Length: 125
Length: 146
Image (cartoon, rainbow over all chains, first blue to last red; front, side, top):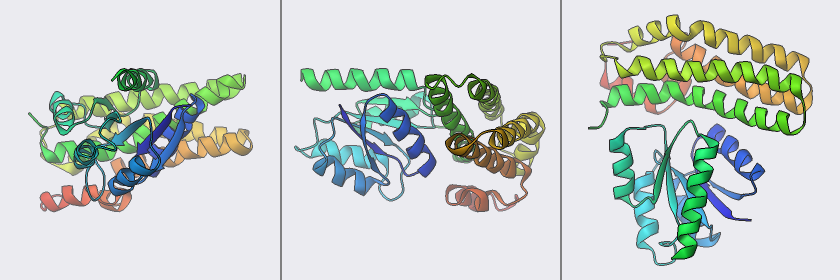
């Protein structure tokens, strides 16, 4: 069962995604803000991270940059989730170090495809 | 080019409860379908269709919004999506009454989100009181509105 770290400050979004991902066979670990996400990425050793870009404190881009700068977490694929869906948002996310990008409201099939693609790429590295 | 901040943040604030409505009802649909509860799935399908229509209308509105007035935006949106939001609330309330236990709780999540959206577009409470946080920036940046 793949372990997925979900970093999302909004309680409802976190509950919805956790339950939907758990139904699809993922072991979901939750973080409510960026610092908790960084801590859990190191301690829980997730296979993949889904992260909201707009977080209180340090935002998603900064969290992604820190994860990619840390040898212990740099190989974990990180997918950005955001309600902002412009091409500029996508480019900013990829420039910040995210491996992929998806928008809210979540299209579950599309998101799962991206998660599985990222997991495959991670394993083939 | 990034969207102007006010449009970006106001749209984000309004989309948040819409996304909750869509997320909870899709979760409910998955669970009801898996459990073979066709009556629940039918009720949820109507809410899903209305919630998606609301999301599309919000996107369409902000694509051409000039950013002149948050109050006007809320008034316009109330005229455009208000009946759909009311219908979601009515359907969710009806389903809460006719369901039991977990299912009623699931429909309650949808009702809460739809009521939050209704409060926003009705401006029955200031947007920043409804949403907390981000909208305060919107109002701080537009002191002549309100």
